[in-house]
Each structure stands twice: as structure tokens, then as C-alpha cells.
Image 1 (cartoon, rainbow, N blue to C red):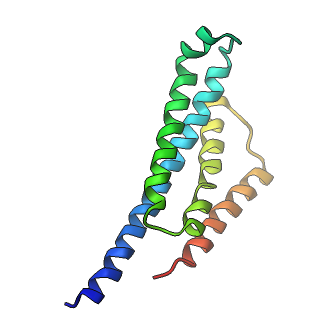
Image 2 (cartoon, one colour):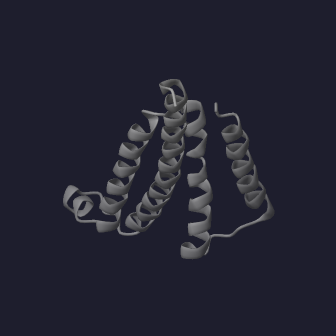
Image 3 (cartoon, rainbow, N blue to C red):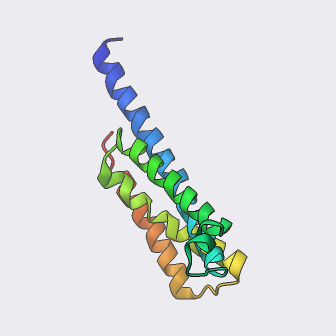
Length: 129
């Protein structure tokens, strides 16, 4: 095999890894938002209460991990492909909120989730080979 056939294959593999990493990052972002919600139930507007509010701190840590994962993922793939995948965090937050907080789901929310998932799929199909 020549090096010209290996390089595109490696580049494709790097892009696939980046897409997978961003997909995992959406779960981190969703979990962070859930922890923010839980932490705000115990919110007190003083510094000591903020730094000892474990759910809030956990949310910040998860959001930091999300950010680091995104930076790593952006190294090897197109921003225009990766960034729309972040919209999946809305799907996860909606699902988690339904199960954890008994948030309501109505036909419009479900249609929005379908649109988000379809949009991510369509944009993903536009990825260069």
C-alpha cells in the first residue's frame, strides 16, 4: 500500500473518533445541566455555599470535561460536522428531565427532538469521505 491510501484512511478514522468523542461529550454536557438544576435547588448566594454545593460543583466539572473533550475532538474533524452534534445534548437533557424531574413531553417537544436528530443525521451525511 502506498502512503497516499493510508493517510486518507487514517484521516477518516480520526474524524470518526472525533465524532464519537463529541457524541460522548453531549452526554457530559447533559449530565452537567442536570447537576446544575439539582444544585440550584440548594442555591445560596454566598461563596462558601457555592463551593460546597456538590451537585453544582459536579456540573462545573462535567462541563469542563465536555469542553476539554470538544477541544480534543476539534483537532481532527471539521467544526461544521462536529458542532451540530452538540445539539444532541438537548435530546439527552429532555429525556433525563422527563425521567428525573417528571418534566412533561408533548407533541411539539417530541417533534423538536425528531428535528434535532434528523438535522444531525443530515449534516453528518455531508461529511467528507
